[in-house]
Image 1 (cartoon, rainbow, N blue to C red):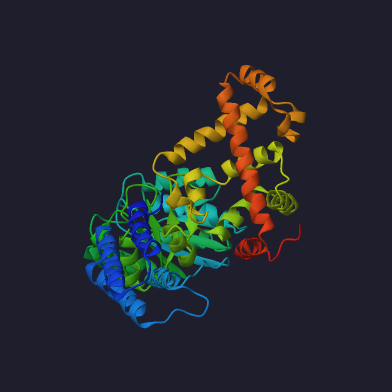
Image 2 (spheres, rainbow, N blue to C red):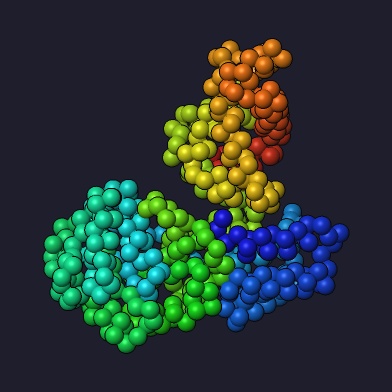
Length: 444
C-alpha cells in the first residue's frame, strides 16, 4: 500500500477528531503534534514537517468552518488541503512532440522507470525512441535494450561507445522524426562534479522539454538535499518517485517537492512496466487519509468495462436488482482493475475498515466465490433465492467445497444487494455518489 505507515498514522490521528464531542484548541494542538510526529517518522524533512504542522494549527485555530460544514469536517479539510499543497500544483505530462531527460543516482530505478514512461506514452498513441546515454554502468545499454524489446520501442546506444555526448547527438538524429525522445542518463553513487558536468553537457545537446528526477522513495531524509543539488545542476521540471509499493516511509516525497518546487508527475508502484501511475495530489492525499478516490476508481473501471455495461451495472446495483451473474461479472472486473489492496484504497473509508491480512483473505474469498458460482446452474445464478439445502449440498459437492462456503457467498450477495438498494433509495446519497463519479444524477 502506498505510504502505508504515514497513511495509518494520519488516519489514526483524524479518528481522534471523529470521536470528540467538540473541537477544542487543546484537541487541535494534540492533533497537530500527532501529525508532526507522523511526518517526522515518515522521513519528512524536519523544517518542512514543522512548517506544515504550523500551517495546519494556525488555520484550524483561526478559520471558521464554512456554512454547512461541521468543525470536525473543517479540520479534516484543512489537513487534506495542506498535504495536497505540500505535494505541489498538479501537472500532467503533455502528450505532444517533446524530448525528455531522465536524471538520478544509481539504484533509484531510473532505467526501469524510463521503460515504464515509454510504455505509458506508447499506450497514449505516441511514437518514441530511447537513447541509452548511461555509458558508465556495465550492461546499462543491454538493460534498456531488453526493456525496449519488451515494449517494442527502439533503443539507440552502444555497449562499446563510452562517449555520452556522441551517443546522444547520434541518437537525436536517428529519432528526429519520432514524437518523443527519452534520454536515460548516467547516475553515480553520489552527485559528484563529473556527473554534474556530464548532465549539463547532455542537457545543452538535448535541449529537453522535461527533465525528470527519478527518486527512490526509501531515500528518506537525503531526498531533499539530493533533489536540490540536481535541480541546481540542470533544472528539474518534475519528479518520478519509485518503489512506493515496498517498505518506503515515503516522507522523502514531500521533501523532494519542497526542495525543487517541481511536482511529482508519476509514482512507481511495482516492478512491472505497467506499474507507473500519474499523481494527482488531491486524489493521492484522499487515499492516504482514507477518504477514498472514486474518480480514479471510475477511470480504472472504465478501462475494463464499456460505458453501456458500466451504466447498466450501476443501475442494477443501486436498485438492488442485480443477480449472482452480475456479482460474478463485477468480481471479474475488480480483478482486472489491479491488486485488491490498491482498489480498496480508492473506496471511501475502506482502507480504515480493512485490517492487515484482511485484503489477502478477501482476495482468496473472491477467488473461492468464483469457483462456487461456476458450479451453479444459470437458473440459480439468475435467482439465488432458489438455492436451498439440497442445492447447496450439490454445489458443494460439485465444487469440492464445504456447504458453509456457499452460505457465506449467499450472505455476502444479500448484504451487497441490500446495501446498494439502500443507497439507491437514498436520493441524497445517490446524488452525492454520482457527483463523485462525475456522472450527475442517475435515473433508475
